[in-house]
Amino acid sequence: MDIAIRQQIFEDAKEWIYQAGQQIREQMNNPYEIDTKSNANDLVTAVDKSTEQFFAEKIRGTYPGHSIVGEEGYGDKVESLDGTLWIVDPIDGTMNFVHQKRNFAISIGIYHDGIGEIGLIYNVMDDVLYSAKKGEGAYREQVKLPLLRDDVKLETSVLGLNAQLVCENKYYNAKKIQQLIRDCRGTRSYGSAALEFAHVAEGILDGYVSMRLAPWDIAAGIVLVEEVGGVTVQATGKPVNLLQNSTILTTNKQIKDRVIDHYIEFN
Ligand code: IPD
Ligand code: CA
Ligand code: CA
Ligand code: CA
Image (cartoon, rainbow, N blue to C red; front, side, top):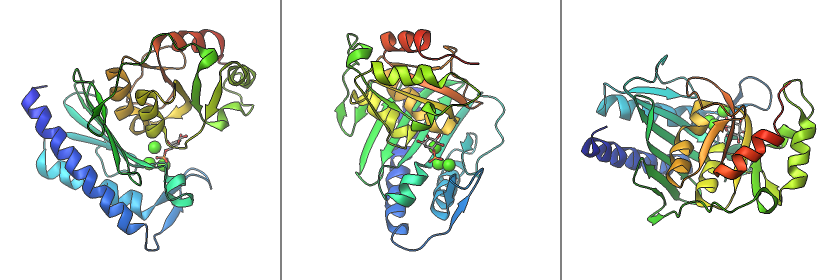
């Protein structure tokens, strides 16, 4: 992607994120509709929808040749990663948005022909933007994030993981995940995949594992983590496919191999 064009896209995306964040902070003070999707705990609100619509209008108005994938369905029906693709999660951590009124983020990953060019994750209530451009490093606000340390061992790691991971299920061996929890130093569950990726990039989590994440949960985070020398793979060890949901591990290279080899066992 042309560097000048990418810079313009980056500036526009940043401006729209700050505008959308302001709108979310205003809308959450008034009553808003809350619906459920796949089950009673899978929430979506009018604010998720209006925020995604806001981005879809801005992107289509400014970049009519680009495609959009969004969680709430205001994007395009995308079947390939060709061209420039905006992968948008208008609110990542809707349950946190509704119940906690904090710990949620806007996540936007911008890809060109399948390559992650820009990642933006905005912690709306803390007003903190994590950003990255391929080859230019990752930032928390204006501060460049250092490369991940390559000497962090599993035994001294703090891992982000979804507590659902440890429940018995028919897909993988939950006992192995329980052993992972015993073997690492500690675990945290923030309830926003995008923020957990940002925390891995920031080095305050040493890794993050979660089941069945969607492209919009991870698209921005992948770019951020890659820019600090980390890796994101499917739990099988295969590369991520941004056209489907997958079980994801994002971390430094040493922990990645250890977790995949010893703690993830699919049935
Ligand atoms: C969810 C959050 C959550 C993760 C779920 C996602 P949403 O996204 O990222 O942390 O565990 O799998 O669906 O629905 O709040 O955008
Ligand atoms: Ca959702
Ligand atoms: Ca999400
Ligand atoms: Ca969402």
